[in-house]
Length: 408
Image 1 (cartoon, rainbow, N blue to C red):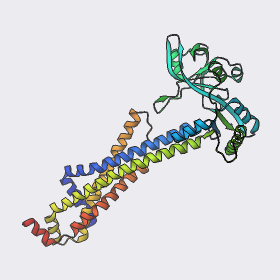
Image 2 (image 1 turned 60 degrees about the horizontal axis):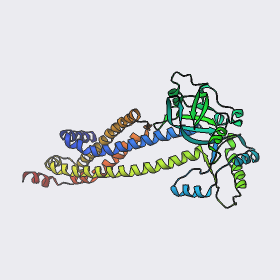
Image 3 (image 1 turned 60 degrees about the vertical axis):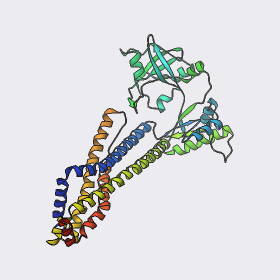
């Protein structure tokens, strides 16, 4: 008997018992579906986050009070130890660095923006210097950004995000009008380009105002956030070292003590994100691996049951000349085909699930090419591993005993 004959016999056996075959491969399919789904969502999120972080540019970094916080303990320690960043810190950076091109100083808060009876709640207010429009990706669709002169005189002007402007000025005539924010009137001088949403949250629900106007209303308490653009993209690390040295000297930090401020770069954020997603992926793979093992055990039991049911068939085939290898290959092929079909079904279900995620939710999802190939390969390996024992058992049956057991 050729190997092709063995495959045909294995396929015929699966077709003769469609319900059993389907129920057996469902467990494998569900495990593969979970893997495909998790891999696709994490892969899509990685690409999405990388795209969002890349808009800062490779030559931009941010200095703030906390930096990248990975645990509650780190946050408490930074809250107790790190002082608020002040304008004197900004002056020290400007005075003591040679590799810094632009500095944008910001503070963030939230408020309700009103115009007459219309209002938008939970608006993200970005109080900033004029350089923020050069360092960060705020494109102006209508009107203009505020200038350094307007920041110097604490002018009450603002640039509205697309969603805020569209709600308050549905006819698109917002530039030159006045809105109320932080309990004060601000003249709208610009409307930002539409940016869309991230994870279901609008990126156009903001208002940009001069930081000096904000501090005139709310006071100068609180820490500043300092966005820095290096003069040379190839010397960003050197620029970071200059800024770090300037702030450590001003804060009188000892040489062997940690920084009492944080420095955030796009690469550091991406590394943190990947560490988080790797942990999530490993947990998901562990859970799914348990599912595949359970599915493999089920398949092994089903194949052993199949051997018992087909004892006479095995005896007859051996009596007419079938060898150990022929019987072994047939039953091993059944096990592998069950698992491989489960893998293919799981890939299809996972692909459909990824499509639904993209359509019905804001979560990005992208199925990498290696995922379905790996899924089918792993399930086939599961079929081989858990099919070896039933196949050996079937191949070693004595033909006389096999025929006798069926006739008793």
